[in-house]
Length: 302
Length: 315
Image (cartoon, rainbow over all chains, first blue to last red):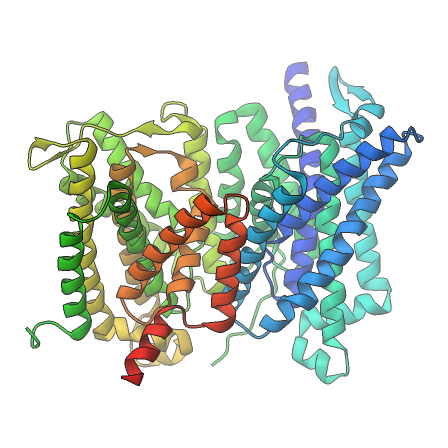
């Protein structure tokens, strides 16, 4: 059954490519929620900013006739160029005034930020599409079992694994990571033990923002960068985070793989349920594990 | 009158009279915006009931869209064309959907409640977008409506829709007001504060929330039905997408939960703001909307209605 076999390969690889892409975005969202209890809708804007800055910078880079491989470093750099100042400004300039408010209100605050940034993008870059296909084209293709895969897509899987390993190492093997985990586990107790929660919040938000922008930056070569790209990605990232358990890093990984593989299966087998299946998985998981697969169980308060 | 109707209800009835009379003075575009605002106000009214309990649905467009598509599908597949009948059927279908989903969703709280609502609304969105028979992302047109057997279209249709939504908003507003001042309605704040104590009082929190969810769903269905008939078109992006749900939540917070009139007031202001911002500040209209929302959250945590309350207490 070679046809059957190649469909399976296509589903697995397409699924993993999609999972890698959405994992990078979702893990930042999940990290911010875990530490700060903020479901950051503006994460979609950070993604879009990352994509736009990356597209612009790659354009300049190739115009300057520099070695092509360096464009990958340019993509990486754009994530930091966007994530650090924007994350800092959003957290210090806006969100910190809202701490202690209802979680739902925090969602709306970030939703308002998201609306404002959508227009900011159009003011800065206009409504034209931007292309940064060079890094995508330069890596070429690989043939597996008569199926052609773009090396750039496969490279994204590597990038996602790298992000996951780095995050795991950072959270479990460094001082600041352990402090972060303490805050995720119990904010009040962490504060009582002398952890500077304010600083942890700022650092977390910037880290999350970098991850959001990173997702956007490395997506830019695959797509035409147009207004509205953040709208679709944020809702997908929500699904991934809800499936995996909000605030859980391994959850984001498993959620991304589930979403990726189910979506790829739908695309290859039943294309008409491509979007439906993602949210059906989300509803199914939430039905049986209300906190998501790796969610924290919160004790009920009387 | 005083014995039968409360102060709020008299206000709603007076507003109904004023709105109906204003029809003769207002230009066509204002009547259209009025219809849309009140129809969306119904959805927000439903969200207000939930928000009083501390719950918010990020997927209310599910019921809004169900109402709209019920009207659309009935119109193109059956001989039904009466505006009132179609609205009632839309209320029933979205109410039924809310009841079924509510059995599951009423177990959830806070952000999880919101996310599950979102998941269900995006499921419907996914089905509609990839359904070629229903026009996919383009949707389809809804026309050939009648009222009491008389075919209506064009300006007449808009006037009929306006009168119908005014009456509907008034009647449903009074209904919700009665519900909120009943024992079941008054439990909202209690459930928000402490569910377990409410359970000790012998009330099923799950059932109370499910009832609220059904009311909210049915109201959203009514809003969706009238919107569809006024616009003459249904499509997934305008009716079911998460941004639509986001707007409803936006208006709920903007309006505040102080009174059943607040959602309608908030909705009218929102539509006017959007229309004017879109017309005069086309490049920064989302920036304006986002700014207004931020300012409301920062300075008016209880919404615009708290301004009305403040003036009322000063008198």
